[in-house]
Length: 141
Image 1: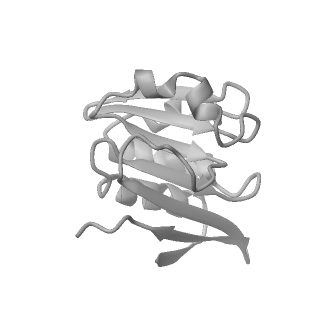
Image 2: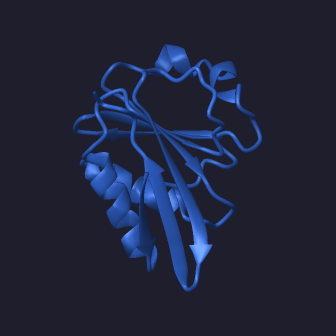
Image 3: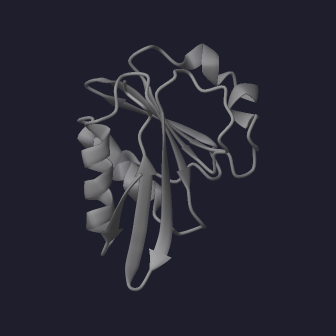
């Protein structure tokens, strides 16, 4: 597990950008954190790291799912707060994803099924005047 203190939204976006560069096509990120913890802010940086426009990113809380185009496939940004752990699949998501797409899931449980074996986790928590990020990448051996 890795961790970093994030002083502000800019640092949160920068972490998303850094981790996007480590995420292979088909990769999935499971995000955890209370409301306002920075999950959507992190996703803005993640999309920038994939070459997409971070200004397009909006919280998927009410829409449940957003799709963003980028030069290296698409980013699917999903919120399971209301849909529950099985909600992704009740949307037919598995039929929409292509091998080059990446998936970011807010309010995700550990269970899937997720589209590939490359599944990373990120937890964001308020700390002092910023937030603490803890993440785990899948075993790449």
